[in-house]
Amino acid sequence: MAKVRDLTAGDTKKLLLIFAFPTLLSNLFQQFYNLADTAIAGHLIGSNALVAIGASSSIFSLVMTFAGGLNAGFGIIISQSFGAKDNDRLKKATAYSLVINLILSAVICVFSLVAIKPLLRLMNTPDERMSDAYSYIIIILAFVIVPMIYNLEITVLRSLGDSKTPLYFLIFASVLNIILDYVFIKFFKMGVAGTAAATVLAQLCAVILCFVVILKNFKIIRLSRIDFKLNTQFLKNMLSTGIAMGMMNSIFSIGSIIMQGSINSLGEDIIAAHLGSRKIAEMFMQPLVTIGMSCSTFVGQNFGAGKVNRIKEGIKYSLIYGFIWSVVSFFVLFFFGGQLAGLVTGSESQLVFENTQMYLRINAPFYFVLSILFTLRFSIQSIDRKVPPLISSSMELLCKICASLIFIPLWGYFGACIAEPLSWFMGAVYLSIVFSKAIKNLPVKA
Image 1 (tube, helix red, strand yellow):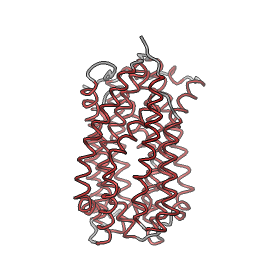
Image 2 (spheres, helix red, strand yellow):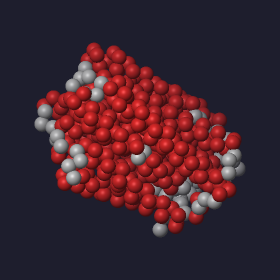
Image 3 (cartoon, one colour):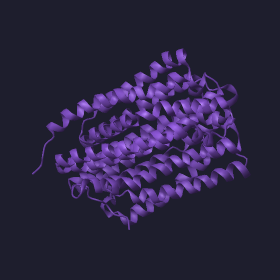
Image 4 (spheres, helix red, strand yellow):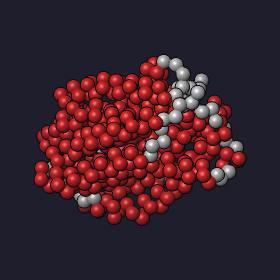
């Protein structure tokens, strides 16, 4: 049976692994069914589908990274409340998170209906791919409430120390998504729109089932009307923490949209290459993201409990695990990355292969730097330091603007490849300095 997990006591290195492993599998399945969309569309429809999805995917990424960051911010307050054994605050945080997600979903839906076509044009989407790109992204954003509520559900569960339940539903959604992708494209002839519809429908089923499990097994967050009662100060705290995390993520994605516009101008082969290489890169980044997220929950609970030494231990072991995975990623991506990306794109173009291989070989040596960035960025948020992660994300935005305006015009796709490692290095150095100072000033509870 699903249960909450207290991370404020016990063997740190063991707890992190036990908690992180199901979260890792969940995130990998999340990436897997995103990758399945791309691979099935590429093989069944052709490279035109990859161009359409690739040209618009950064918009979806912007929306979901903001929503994911927002809910991660809410998760910090939930985990802190759980660590402090404050059940009233825990329920109120969960209730407010639900209301904010519903309101934000409505805003995004309305905005997408008005602004998506102009934004696709601004991003230099090829005219012959505009229709497919629009049909893909509009379906995703019109039903954005589905991934947002699911994101909230798994954030709440992980904040309570349960990383297994989200895994079960991610596996279910991933398998269902793959089946629906094939059915909608192969038999219903829905084209690119079928990949979007399959994603939405699979996640909707997971949302409903996950809600039933939460209602049945997690009495600690069973809400009543009083939990929704307005507390202005608490709402401000929720919004400031959530928006800070959302902005941190979205600043990075805004940079990706700006850079995608320049990449789109390089031609359809480069668009397909960038999409394929990013899909593979994101698969190998997921363990690093997972380590950072797990450390954030660990730090949040121990911050609520006032256990500073355990926070330091959590950071140490998270960086050790990140280093181990970074070494593995380097060897796989450096020597086999191009071939893996080729399996995703289904493209036989030598230009696509060469550029996917270049992207992955340039990025792979810097994955440990990325591990430091993720771990410290999430953990600093969990000790109520909201501004430094925003500054680090702004550094990444600056690097991507430079790539769009300077690097790509000068060096082509190579300019896009070097932008991310440069931004990771700048952010990691800055956050290391910030964290080393912040940890010394944390209050310790008796």
